[in-house]
Image (cartoon, rainbow over all chains, first blue to last red; front, side, top):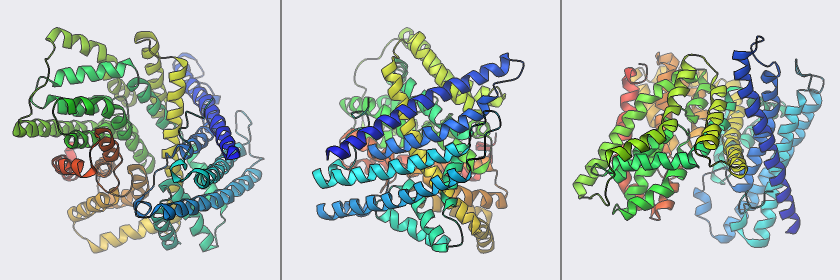
Length: 172
Length: 419
């Protein structure tokens, strides 16, 4: 249980950090570009076209992982609501198992894509475009880990604790 | 492959797998089943959606809304709306409608609207003598006005599917939004008059009301300058969203002095989470959409509908019925993203303007947000009102019928959206 909570805390801290850093960077960059377009003779900042494409995948995957921890991704609970307490526990384990297997496979596929596209670089900043696939890979890995931690919590304390109590409580 | 994709998605939905995950996994299962396509296609489609520049508008409109609604400006706005509406019969009740309309100008999400306004308005309305179910029904339905008044997250999503300009969609949403607000205010007045609900407490003077209006002006002005900036090409929708954040930060720091690092940090993280929720659905639906297009499903669907139903009016009616049914179990973004790629070509084959279709889809699926069995704003409002789902649903019908009437008007009267 302690290990699962530790992993959860680590995921939360990492994702909060990514969201904050990329979010602020995107705000400054895009707002600066609007001002620059009307002030500079060049008509804007060259990197302002490229950097959002590089940063946005990281912002998104961090948001998806935090939402997964907080139970933000909604589903149709019609069948779940009709099950007894034992049935619900088994269903949650089954769902988590599906998520773990699927996202581990997609994690591997994203890594392969990143490897294949390593030689492609962005025109202005010369940064490998594969870093975007690495973001997707990280997202898949974090989702698989979050599902595994959820199952550990269900085993130890019951289905009520399938999500972390709040993404805020475990944050820095 | 499309059959396996649909089947896998339905099974995953029944197993209570979240919709976004369900679409990603169903796409992977379909590719594995087919065997002719590499599984990398799914990962590639997930990544592709993160490269969309217009999509960047989503987190920033969410952040701007959160910064404005969570601070003093939000409270000033709410006080202004309630003090203004209290003067009329059923005014406490219709404050929800007016507040949803003005908050629609800073937020872009019905869920954010009901979560932010519900805890303030519903307890106050209950204390004023209105039944909990009615307060909840009014809150759940009025939240949808938020997604018609610019900025609107669902309209941005629709622009991504259809390629229609965000500015045109935002402009087209204003009149339907105001019409919906007008009809809901009338319903609040009519219900209160019929049941004899009386005003509780005193009203403030005209001078004080004017002072509140002046203090609320920066928020009331936001949808106006958003439309002006987009209409005259001052900035792209994404840049306008970022400027809305800068505007909110500047107002909160310089004018209202209520923004510190901790609140900004939480607002940013919440915007990240809200973006994550929507983006997973977008990424999943892109993977599913790619496979359906690969199988030529949208084209075959259009051909089948055109051959089966000859009358365009009936096709439009059928589209609305399908969306109303789909909107009941499915949330708005996944339903919009799943059916948009199928309905856009169908609408084009009928000569329907894509802007009008966008409003039809968003209003229709917006109704789905508060219809059982799965209604996000319905659940939020009911839990805030501390009443049963039955009580809320019983009070919901007049609002539902008014919204459906408006939907039919939007469907068959193009002038309401293409002005």
